[in-house]
Image (cartoon, rainbow, N blue to C red):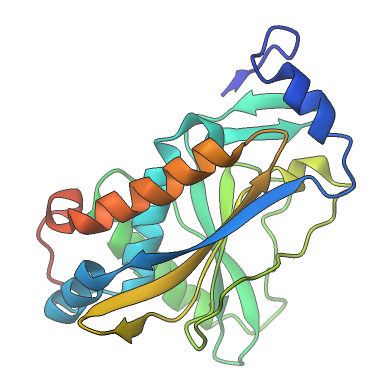
Length: 221
């Protein structure tokens, strides 16, 4: 983790402007072509949610802007960021679950599947936040609906928590011979502009387009 010198930072003026906004969040919803991913998961038996979580996290970690966080009114560039995602328990209550990001898909996948199964069984005082951690992406999935936009909850008085990017995606649907899925990325405008936001979406789409090389061969069974 490296602290950013706000006085010499190229985004100094932008940061000083947007940090004072009541609502400093920039977001966009994009329809991704997930045909390769859907077919891959059908063929291998892999979890769509776990696989897409890996793709999105790895792609965004490759873009420096997405690893910027505000902590105690200072800006830091993080080395690694983990996915912190929502899991529905057997009691149909949502809880927060975090998995350690790894460069190797197979290792990440195996660990995340264990994390999800453990979270599903929580019945006593389920956790619903990651405390003061900022080295995460907040992730949610609504696989029951094909949404066109989504609004995330924020406590804008908490600058640190507000600096954590939010990722959300919905149900993949058939459009002709392709599968499409809406994905939304929301981030703090003091740290991220439209260009890196676009780079994030494009990196994810490129990874899906070249999925076999991005993930490597895999068979859950």
